[in-house]
Amino acid sequence: MFTAGLVLGGAALAQSIVVASTTSTEQSGLFSYLLPEFKKASGIDVKVVALGTGQAIDMARRGDAEVLFVHDKVAEDKFVADGFAAKRLEVMYNDFVLIGPKADPAATKGSDIVAAMKKVATTNAPFISRGDKSGTHAAELRFWKMTDTDANKGTGYKECGCGMGPALNIGSSAGGYVLADRGTWLNFKNRGDLVVLVEGDKRLFNQYGVMLVSAAKHPQVKTADGQKFVDWVTGPAGQAAIAGYKIGGEQLFFPNAVK
Image 1 (cartoon, rainbow, N blue to C red):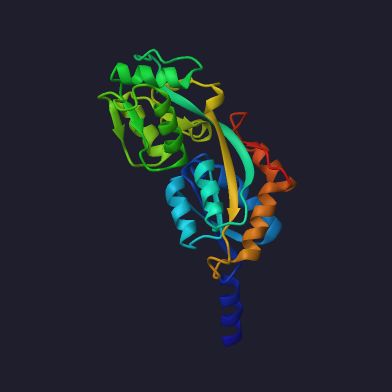
Image 2: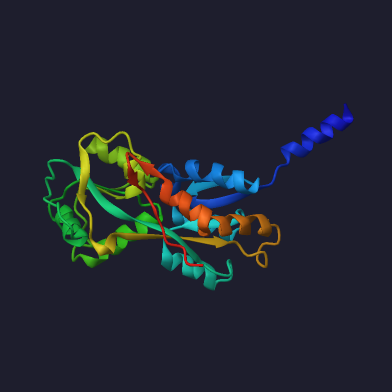
């Protein structure tokens, strides 16, 4: 009986790592698709903690994750410069889109995100900002700064301090505009009368990076297992798996790792 208990105990202590990532990679369904493939290849379980990019970076800075997988290049470069990772590797990209009511009361439809957001502000249309220091929120703030209405985003501007899915839910119920990543939008079921209104602007490009948390900063991190995940997701098998994830025949993310 004692021996059996040891065997069972050993099975419970399977190899595992923590990946601090964004709500978009989880709410788009990407990780549910990728992680079984990685487990099959490596035998390693992955626990994803999905947060806004700013919170995910804070988590990795504390050493509470082996791998950081996010989408705010400026913040990622600082993470590396501060010594929390040896390097940042590009993994994949998709794009941001401006979602809004089909009737488009602010007349935003087109391919110019800055002009569209200026119209949202000047018409006081409802706009739901994530307000959570995520990569999507950081992009939204960049676009506001490009308008001359940054100091006055209109009376309809509201911050929810929430993830991408909840922000879209609020937008759906409020008939508001929301900047979203395309992956989460394609996996979003509660659309109401929301549609994509602005897309195709090169400024909407959304790059994701992956970093192994430094053992020099945090000796407790499982560097070898974390490195296996980084190598897999940026290697041929992981990149093929990313390309293979589709909803309704539409590809959500485009692999672009450079080895």
